[in-house]
Length: 311
Image 1 (cartoon, rainbow, N blue to C red):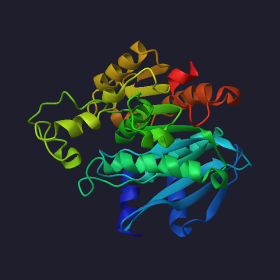
Image 2 (image 1 turned 180 degrees about the vertical axis):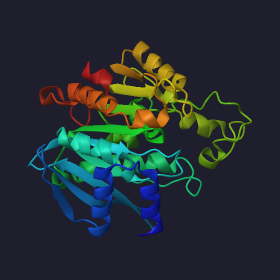
Image 3 (image 1 turned 120 degrees about the vertical axis):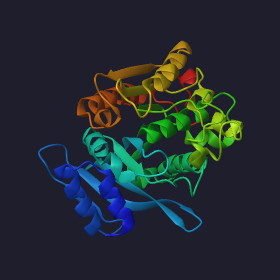
């Protein structure tokens, strides 16, 4: 077992299914497909596909999908870990659940701080969306129906991905990174008002807010809130001490004021980790995606993917 795979195991909660799948992953070479046959809808898993090469780093994705012809709606799944740790394996339970519900899930690794400071993480997420569209036929994806889904730092990146690409003043080069829905769990959403002399996020954003005010602004999903945003579902534990719930609540209210279809699931008596492991919250998140991704007759073309254009 490599050092990276050992870290993957340490970041997973011990659940028999997850542990068995990790062992399967260690024994199956890259690109080989495993098919799970259970009493539930059968799903396929394909491990360690390269979605991007950055210098000497191969960025890998695991694919979870229904065992059928497709094309299916898709979810880009983005792990947490404070932008400095974690891997695509962190969201294995969420990925399995979504695949059984009829989605193709692409769970990615991305470059981590401090070796790779912002914007490396969001650049990799954007490239993953482009890759999903380029490889839509082999992945069995309906390229019109791609959502982003993440928890903690992954929730932050999911929101930033969606809101920056849909903003009216966005640059043309982000048009092919748009997604049509978002699930953001336990997400920090705004760095613009942090104490300007605190260095807590310096490893990620390159310095304090006093030193890197523009970076803190560009890294804040709330900076890009607009009426053009896609539908977003937030879920957050009301006892989260790691990422205060007020951060995602403020963005939710801001988007609601803009007329964006948003929903908020406040998970009662639940902290950061407990909310991540809450299966009922994950099911409610999928119900939200079902409402906004299943009606193919109303799906926009890739050139018209903003919420404002859909209304």
